[in-house]
Amino acid sequence: MAKLDKTQRTVAGLVGVVVTMGALGFASVPLYDLFCRVTGYGGTTQEARADSDVILDKTINIRFDGSLSSGMPWEFKPSQAEMTVRIGETGLAFYEAYNPTDKPIAGQASYNVFPFTAGGYFNKIACFCFTEQVLQPGERVQMPVTFYVDPEIVDDPDGKFVEEITLSYTFYEIDLPDAEEAQAALTTGQPATTTEYN
Image 1 (cartoon, rainbow, N blue to C red):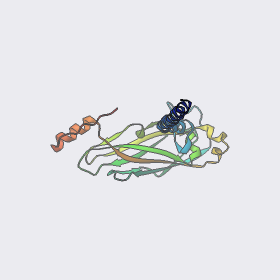
Image 2: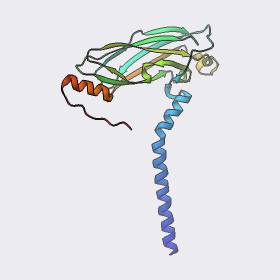
Image 3: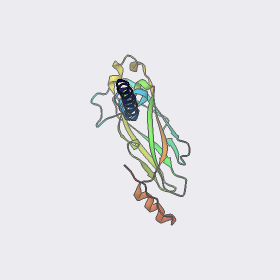
Image 4: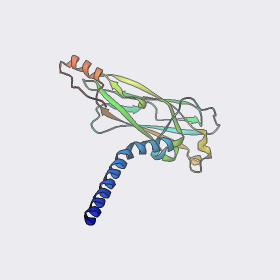
């Protein structure tokens, strides 16, 4: 009987380890995302609700980069290659997207900055990357991003040496929202498929 109890305890312990590892694995993606957003780790930028209260005389060069994930049929590029702003000054840049296909395409942009040490100091006030974008057939749009570099970067042991930051976006295709999909079905005469969102 004691042997059976020991076996049961061992099995229960192993089941507990498996459940714990599964829970940690499930939680790791949102926790990692939260960690990156809070710390700027991996070049993850910050979100701000308003302009900076402080603008320094020191300037910094901002470069812009745009790419597409594999299979994304859009054309996508920055409207300007670079700009110079004062640290703390609000900058406004544009990216251009074009849908050359004969159907609506929805996209979402992922983003980061380089060097990664600047991620915690690059603040976006408004950005097309905050929401999904839908382009109709043949539609071309200018998409704005409003940002500033936090003046606290000059007090960072590594950040104070950063003279240039590259802001990069990659657009990938996502499912059309239900309303857009229904409209596309009316236009093409094809039945709309139903997508469930949890």
